[in-house]
Amino acid sequence: MAQEVPDFVREGLRNMRLLRDGERIQATSLTGGVSSDIWRVDLLGAGDTRSYCIKRALARLRVADEWQAPVERGYYEILWLKEAFAIRPQNILEIVGEDRFTGSFAMEYLPAEDYASWKQLLAAGRVGVDIARAVASAIVNIHAQTAGDPRIARKFATDDMFMSLRPAPYFLTAARRNPALAPVLQALVERLMQTKLALVHGDLSPKNILVGPRGPFIVDAETAWYGDPAFDLAFCLNHLLLKCLWRPASRDEFLDAFTVFRDSYVEIVCWEPVHGLERRAVSLLYAMMLARVDGKSPVEYLSGAADQNLLRGFASEGLLQPEATLAAVRDRWRRTLAA
Image (cartoon, rainbow, N blue to C red):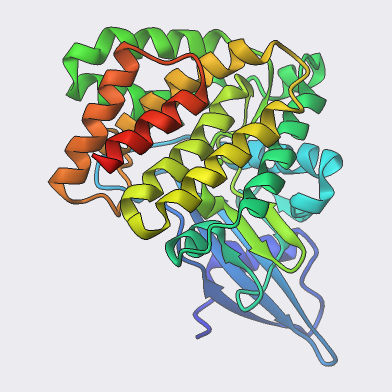
């Protein structure tokens, strides 16, 4: 159902010169995000209708804990989308307008009747190893094409912003709630923030991957940062492991997708030895598992104490004694669930 058009949408469309004389605006709020206002906008003219997705970053994220974040992250999202589109246009939506005054930007709208988030498909048991392969190929090519690039490093020197969006609310919050693990998590954060290798998306979650007739599209790059590409690898793999608790009937398919994602990713890695990247990804993966229970943004589908305790125990053990490979993490997770 169409809703009242927000002022920032109307002003943004005008400033982006997307609104033509005589066109009416029909706007519908899109759900699913905690960090942004996102709207579908239909511009109704005499002879046609044009549809866009309009987005603006929020200063306070929609989570239970107090979580403020810099709104300039919207600017860096635009930059990430432009750089990534130049590398991987088949998996990135094109920016069609941006407005610094309202802090908003416009991109192509993918119709909901044709596109669903990968999270929605996973929830329905439609795991799709082909999706895992395509997403891994897209993100690793973005990493490979930006690795060691001083221009990209200067453009995405967003350490403070990234810290406020990921390490602090995820890992440092989990450290405060698990004092025995605090030294390990603090050391992990220090290593993470010192690793400068490639352009990182920072929120490579299934909810930020839209799947439809033209394949998967990666969206929501508000946490863009020049840093450790192992972060993106671990971030997506973490969600595939967590889904095993959410939808136990599809456990084997989730683990197969984990394997395909990891294998598809590492076969393109060219900027460093795979074993070093994989070791960092293992420790990040364990930290992320713990953070999705004890960080500021816990996953909403793990509300039962039994699942939370299982995940907390598994992640804690892995942080203290991490394996050398992601396959070993997967196999231990499989054994833990079977038990």
